[in-house]
Image (cartoon, rainbow, N blue to C red):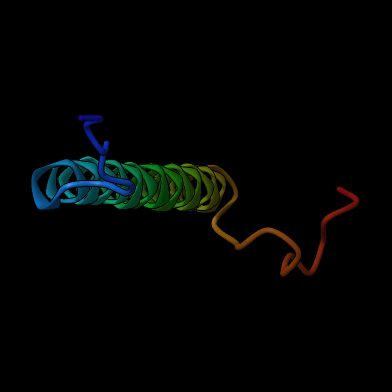
Length: 73
């Protein structure tokens, strides 16, 4: 008698593959959220630097940059 080997995958094998795919997709989307948050924090930091520069200019010259009447003096 010859034994017939079944073709295809078992339910356990398919479920393991689906779990692995789910973990990979979850990890990728979590990583993308971290990258986006990092970019947002970098932009906020840059805006704060501009704010400090404008305030420093205002304290030194009692005017806003680009708004001085007698800038050439």
